[in-house]
Length: 470
Image (tube, rainbow, N blue to C red; front, side, top):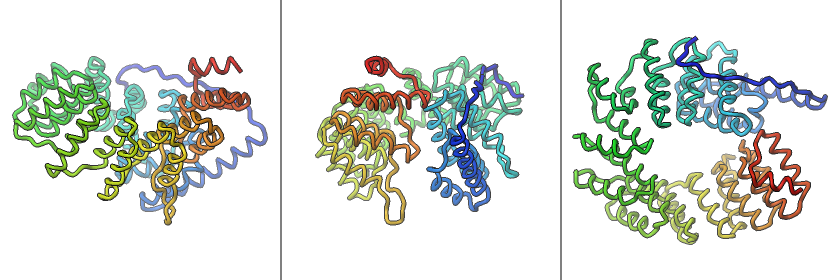
């Protein structure tokens, strides 16, 4: 067994009693699941298998069986469609996290991936799983999967684990894991050393004859920025002779996230002084930062500047401005920008639409929000969904309708979201519970409470107060 370090991971075995009805229902679901899984493993090419999986997703309940998910993940990984496989794994993990702890989720998914009976199963699926966990910040779970393997995972997975520990600021643990990997035959690459953000990194590189290039410096700077160590990031920038827009954008983005817009502009000015022109990412980052800082005037000024300079704004730029105007209560300007974006043949994404729906709801225009939601999530002539809704869309609609005392419509959207494989989180339950309680719908409050328990969620203080009053 491959062990980086001991990790406790226990599972609870709970017995369950089933009625005849539930047994029959389970039998039907098992038959459907087996059929879907078999089709996924036999259909060609892999992209067709993915389309088949997506078209049948409403028949698949990951809480009952993970076999179809395991099958499509193996198929995609074997076809080297790693990005699609990781995205699917992340969506699956997010769904399961609503009813299980992260450690339990990793155990369930690992068991499903290792338990698939298919002659063409792909060993690389475990590295794909580890990378997905690390990118989601679930590094401990990624390490647990490593421990379950009999050999080191692939280089990319090892780097993902180290990078995840860096982003979490666990530098001591990172070095402990890194040394454990070296002991077991791990061969570091330049990318690996780029992840090792520590005071010993340069010494280790020099000792092993691996020189620090611009690519490595960029990763180191991004690592420092990711954990808020801006002085070290600036120190590395000053040592560089070949800094690029990527380097400066990392630092500008970090300052924007911290709300330090003066510092961000200062770095941008230094960038121009050094002969590097800001690009669409630079402007979009600064615009988003000013919008989040409630300085819409500065954001629009930058937007005008990039247009004058011939830099074409993208969906990220427009979404940042639309969100800023919505939060500022200027829905008219938000929709003007939305129309301008569409006229420029820039397709709005789910985040753009979420901002507009949230803005309409917060301004009490719930009817318009519902209409916009239905327009954007309705089916096209070919049957494809224009825009798959997300939690933000539903949360905005449900909260807006509850505050407007339209509880029937709120309940409809609350139930409807599951059709898209989305499950309510604690915040949504809290909003619904408060609305039903204020309307004195005691039975609905009790039903919501039962659903909360069924989903394995723990009521917060406000919810407990409401439930104690019923």
